[in-house]
Length: 290
Ligand code: GDP
Image (cartoon, rainbow, N blue to C red; front, top):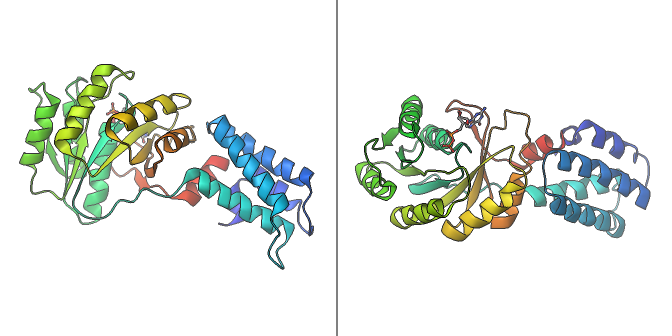
């Protein structure tokens, strides 16, 4: 990771260490404060920030820099390693046949993400299909179909049906020729019991290879409860963060990652089907600190 990616104020603080061979507690405190400020501003949970701070402080002061390493490079390496530990690796998404189910609250960006992921898989040479099971939100069918058309991928939905479990079953059958099945589910405004029981039923029919939780980048404290509930009901293997084209930096999603023991799979940054990228730790760290 190049130092440029760390954000200008942190870089400035680290640069003060230039020429020093030993690092003082004061130096480390200043660096840690800088990182804390950025991470908290990016909505990273306080306790995660505190854990990270403690590790950076402890390691910077206790670990001996390898021979020839300056104090600045030593701390920089530790800061980087700890940040990578915080954001985690990218969720493994093999380029092979699979079924992926999306879960999340209404408005989080599931339908959009389903189409984006389908587009992404099609660009990787696979044949994806989107199955829309959202019978709850008016307009969900039309929106999903329109986006799947734009992504030029197969689509299944039934605007006249009202049983999402049946739609999921029929959808898998109707798109049996596809390699990758992406099953979009209905959200709710809040975590309601009927949402959880519905998604559990869909999950038992779909038997997904992986289930992704879709979270709006602006999510703050709410991430924890959502992640817990969805993980308990269907098991969350990865997170997709949407709306990163806005001002929110998506640090709240790290709470969900921590809570579910999962990783981040995809990032969404716009309303069109191409606005998707795989999560990549270095650039996400830069975004958090920038
Ligand atoms: P769902 O209820 O979870 O299926 O959410 P939708 O996919 O319908 O998304 C809700 C709104 O957020 C829609 O207006 C989308 O166009 C918008 N949206 C989704 N993802 C993004 C994104 O990455 N960036 C922006 N700017 N808007 C997004």
